[in-house]
Image (cartoon, rainbow, N blue to C red):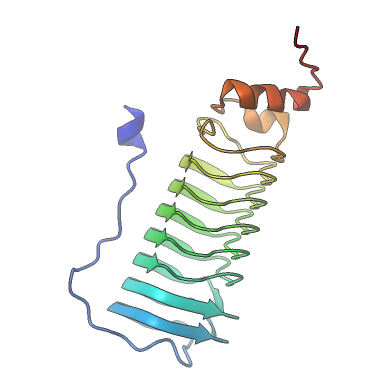
Length: 217
């Protein structure tokens, strides 16, 4: 099976025409919200758990001081949104895209991500610890100091992204291609790197983990 076929990520299945929905106000636990677009608004100080979102587009939405734990998102797209510091811990994301979004400090710990794309996102200090990521792509994104400790990766792609100071200890990078990314100061264990794909320059930098001293003539 080729890498291209193996790593194909399914996009959200969203109708071309959607009704405009009102922003979340007094959202309740276990609500079900589907088939609509929520544009150009701010959602503030809302908290709920185990809400199901299906075939929803958020466009130019600011999420401020929100706690949406254990949300179930299927066929959802975020465009030009700000989810900085949003608490989505324990969430399930399936066929989800975040495009041109700010996700600084977002909490996706203990979450499950399947067929998810992050494209041109600012994810500094994002928290993915103990997450399970299958067919997830991070493209052209700022992931400085992101926390992926003790996570499980399957068919995960990092492309042209900044992973400097990222924490990946306890997460196997077997089969993960980091060669197009900046990885200075990355936090990993030696055993985590087994099978990872890196550039020659990155290999020299990572040799410090082995206690090697690279000598140049």
